Amino acid sequence: GIIADKIYIFATIYVTNRHQATFLKGTLTKLRDFTEGTLLVGGDFNTPLDPTLDSSSGHSCIPQRNIRSIRNSLNNLGLVDCCRAINPSSKDFTHYSALHDRYARIDYLFVKQEGLSRLIKATIEPATCSDHNPVRIDL
Image 1 (cartoon, rainbow, N blue to C red):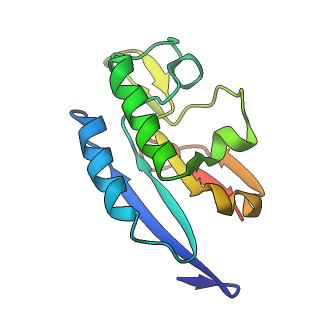
Image 2 (image 1 turned 30 degrees about the vertical axis):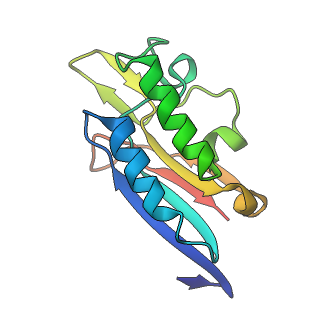
């Protein structure tokens, strides 16, 4: 879409609880074709990308090699975590799992590196009608 004379490409992703790395690699590869405008990718990734900061327990049940693979796929496309770019060391969470009795940040908004200069603010808002907190960015 075009907003204030700027082109934006929005992609929303839901990653299932299994095979996150394989699914994301395939999905993100398809987004390489979008070269014009600012690419924004967001959704429920079902993975804390930095378990130390993104999980209240400080770790994840997802193997570290899978998390590394996901981060590599995001980096290869030049995608930057908006919340982490603005708040590099904050521990804010987007989901509570009663089953595991832990909070985690598993919902993300990413922008391509070249669009990072447009990012003004990134916050995790209170949950209202979902078990996930929305992630908000201001460009």
